[in-house]
Image (tube, rainbow, N blue to C red):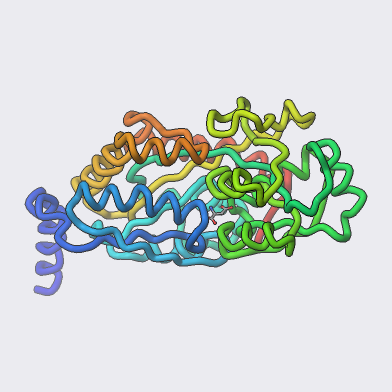
Length: 322
Ligand code: ASP
């Protein structure tokens, strides 16, 4: 009896009629980092617009700690009914799967992709107290003052940590790292010179660079972004091989009905077609994916490709969290 009621319920939940009624209440969007940081900002900009599209509010739930692994665990265990979804990025949804050896969920098997979201490069930024004038001088300064310098990250595996791994490897520097619950709070400490350096998403630090509160040395991209045409690429500044873009995406727990995924995807596509949203994101250095790249199947293939790309890099760097 109980079993048949449950299976009827499962059929009802998966039926097109249920999907038509969806969403009938607010949707919780789990954000794996602190408020005020780049992932939170992306969630708020895109989530608010998706909410308008779907006629329901998106409620942001910042589940911080351990570079997003706690948040993704919570998402994987949430009811697959479309009322809890999560935002993540290259760090939380690829690199963490390669460096955290004891995750109690699988990023590919326990979550389903909804849509790929924009991608931004990292900026090499320091507090205004650091005297270097360009990247070469900065590297010399970091080497000469190794014991006095600390850098901020959002934990091992976060975007800012991926940036540090690439930066240390290419420049031969090795300063100590302070983990934060997100780069929103970290960048405030950088402005205050509590820490001296970050390799930080452009969407987080570019506004502070423009306001004269931080110094910028290079961008980890092949080409200078339109939003920061005066900032040299890392290769132009003398250090090739530090090209990292932090792309974002939306996921749902496995078992979420495909009709609901399709509705959420359509709302995300509509959000990123909105000229006002595009302007806001592009001004922060974000590259906006095409509607085709945003489709769940295309995004799934992209995410799997990123696992293949990063697996040998992480193995070579031998970065593990047991
Ligand atoms: N995206 C993270 C945040 O929102 C930071 C990071 O991955 O470095 O804080």
